[in-house]
Length: 108
Length: 118
Image (cartoon, rainbow over the protein chains, first blue to last red):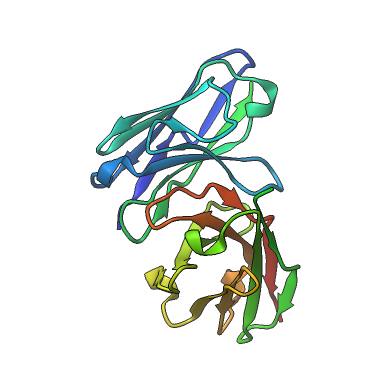
């Protein structure tokens, strides 16, 4: 099983600042089958990034994904008030599909 | 529009079973699969398994093997997840999500709260 470790656990930032979230895999994620999701309280997760770096439909370009192999990054270039949420990475290249434990981005 | 609509909240006693439904609309049901993901209160996301709506092939998380069954009804574009021998630690919000064999989860249901309590 591929274990995904996200860091930091919590990121305290102000609107307008840049957010950099990390996701490290215990073994290589095949063909960059790595996704990022955003979840707000009481809501279902929303797909942001798939294939490590492709933005999902309707996702603003301030969200970008990068990385390959075992190290992946989600960057939010300038935080908007609606971006404060929990972010999860997920690998879907080999069973069992797994999620990271999440990074909470909170208002400083 | 493309959407997944899940059945309502359930309260079950330990040892019972629960069956959650997920009705798809706005796309060709058999062109995708459905994954099930659960989230215990205050916790992260846990993948439970995936079913192909095309041929019914399944892949389950090992920790749930023997207790979970995922099915689809193509006549109604509905997926089902049944979990048996419920325990208190099965208390969670259960989500269905659309995904292909090697696709991210692009459409999610609204979630179904399942509470297991004596």
